[in-house]
Image (tube, rainbow, N blue to C red; front, side, top):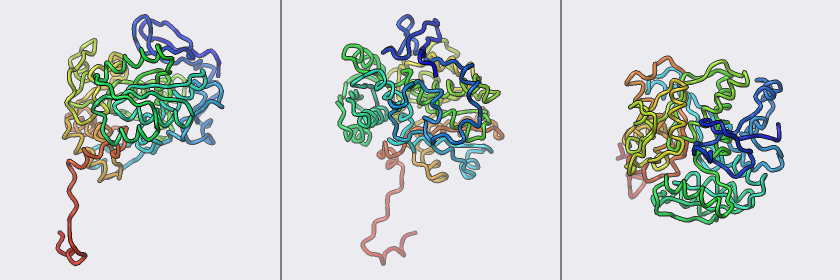
Length: 405
C-alpha cells in the first residue's frame, strides 16, 4: 500500500493527508473519504486473493488505511454470518433473502468494524485518547477497543442512552459523560472537543470509521460467491453506515471484482426520518427533523451529518428510502427471532420491517435478491423486547405444568 493516502471531499475535491486530524472538509463541511490507488491495487488482487486470508475485517488489509500492521487493534470483528432463512423468506415473500447478522461482532453491533480501524489509526499517528458522541453502541465499541489498545477514551452520551448500553460502556472504564444535548449538537461538540484537547475522534461518519464499516460489503460479496444483490437494506441514522456500504460496493467495482452495483435502501424510524422525508419529497437537502419520537434510539438522529451524502448515493444507486413505525420494528424483531434465531434491538430489525413494507407496496419484487443488515443485538435494549413479549408462566410446583396450554 502507498504511504501517501489522502482523504477527499466529494463536493469540492479538496484533499487532506489521511493521517491528519481532520474529519470533514474545512471548506464545505462535507464528510471526507479515504482515497486509494485502485489501479495499482487491482493489479495485485483477484477473487482468489482472499481464499486463505484471515477471517475478520483485516482480510482486506490492502483496502484499509493502516500501513504498519503492528498498529492494528483487532478483536476479530467482521466476517459475520450472512444468513439465509427459508421461513423468513416465506413470511416476507422474497425468494432470495439474506440477513447480514452484525450482532455477532465483539461488542454486539456493527460499530466494531469502524472502531477497529479508527483506534488502529489513532495508535498509528500517536494519539493517546480517542473520543466519540454516542447513543450507546458507538460508545461501547470505542471504549472496548481503546481498552484493548491501552489508550484512553472519552465517551459523550445523550441522556436517553438505554441502561443496558450504559452498563456496557461503563464496564470498560472510559471517561463517560452524559451531556444534555441532542445528538446532532453533541456530534459537533465532540469534533470541537477533539481539536481543543487533542482527542482522535471516531464516530458517526468520520473517515476511519467508514473504512472499517465498508468491509461488510466486501464480505457480503464474497459470501454470495462474488454475486451482487439487487438491493441492500440498512437501518439509517447519521448516514455513515450506508455511506460505508456504498463505498465498499463502489470499490469492488473499481477493482474489477464485480460488474454491477446494488441499489441501496435507507430505512428510518417514522419518529425520526429526516433523510427519508427529503428523499420522498425530492428535496436537494436534508432538513433537521425536530425532536425524535421513537424507541429506536440507535437510529434517532434528527440532523444527520451525512444526510446529503446519503441522498446522493440513494439517487446514484437508484435506491430508495422507507420509514417504519415503532410497532413495525417490534413486530420485525419478533419475526426475525422466531424465524432465524437472531435477537436484534428494534433499530437493528428496522431493515426487516422496511423490507416487509416495501414488498407490500411493490418497491421490492419477490424474485429479487435482497440483503437486510441487522445492526445491533437485542441485548442492547431488553426493555423494548419485554414490552411485546409474552410473560413466563408461573407455577408453584412441577405438578402444575400439566395445566399449561
